[in-house]
Image (cartoon, rainbow, N blue to C red; front, side, top):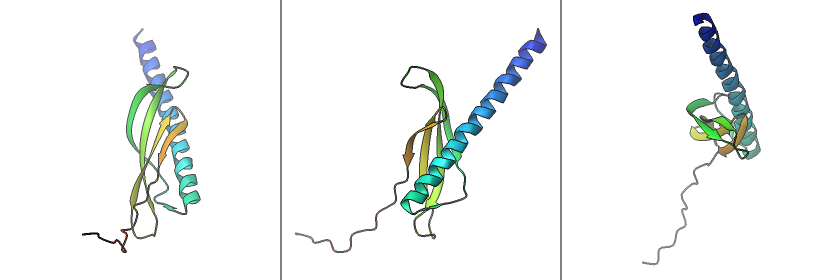
Length: 110
């Protein structure tokens, strides 16, 4: 009986690892595509896991929701943090907001 429980634990850990790799690859593809589309540089060509939690999709199915952080550059001299959230293997949120330069021709009415 102990061997069966141990086998089930190893199978669950193997599934979790495989599922996490699939979600990570989807996040990397999405970050790379978004950076290319916006003319940004996707730095380090990777994403880092920020959180994992159970969540339900639109059909009510329980899946793992993962949040990833990554870095990109708009001019090659800086690092800006972006984020991606996946639900299962689908990307549901992608954030690549670049900071806007300060406006230099502001007119004060005071």
